[in-house]
Image 1 (spheres, one colour):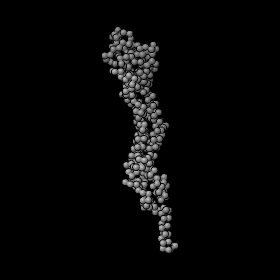
Image 2 (cartoon, one colour):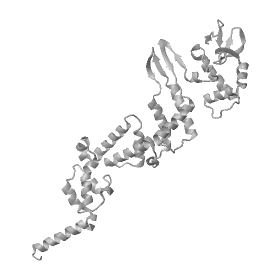
Image 3 (cartoon, one colour):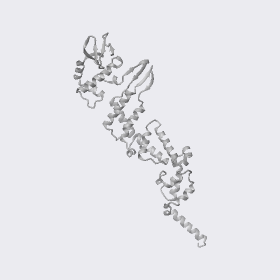
Image 4 (cartoon, helix red, strand yellow):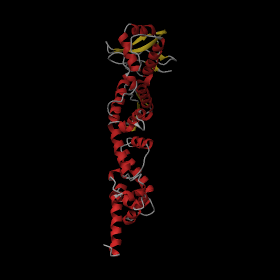
Length: 359
């Protein structure tokens, strides 16, 4: 049982149903504690009066439904709604055995969503719960930041996000003692990661290359990074790395380190050079240029992560010398069809004729 004396010296006893009280001068009736926005004071209302005031004020009903997160905001009253009101009123009334405002501007649950509870030793626990409309807008803003414009989130996902966020906020209050924060509730990064969990549903392995915002920017950065390090990534792996890159402040740097390490495993002979800040592409450029020149190819069409000649030169226990690489290219079937091969053959034949004195 909890006791309170909000009106003078009158003794008030809380019933077994939280939020309902018996007054010493009228023990036969059940009362609620209600904030009167006109007088600016708390008053006692009998159950019938309490409910009658709701029926007479449809705008108050709408305000309560909005605060409670109802999908349909109207002035109608049904038994389920009354149960919700009584449940919240009970929570408000029993907090710290003291009165809680239901809102100076009418029926607002702001004080309930931001209630502070003080325990032993001066430790204070404050649960700050984001307003549902504000939380929904924050999700939409985050989606725009990460995906760019043109991708619409459905209402069911928005509602699920808001509910999960509010539930986490209630479980993670800010804990403080004598003005010092001991534990600080949900962080901005944690809220952002929760939003990304829902945003990620709209980004497929195939479609991530087409999104805008931060995810699109990081996709292009990581895709280019993998190319520079000669690392092949399938679409699913690339998508995962893109989301890893926004998982923390150092996310993109961590992804770069991961790709660098993958390159060291694949190109073991290049590890000393990679440790000095070079990329696989920096080292491969000379080999690419030599193949393009010898086989008369467009160097831009030679992919270092897929070309068999380049891979053979770079992925062994030791780096293949350039002269040996050039020699191996002459065994490539493409070589015989090049002007270089014909010219070399012609020069060879001319040399033979000259050696025999036939020219």
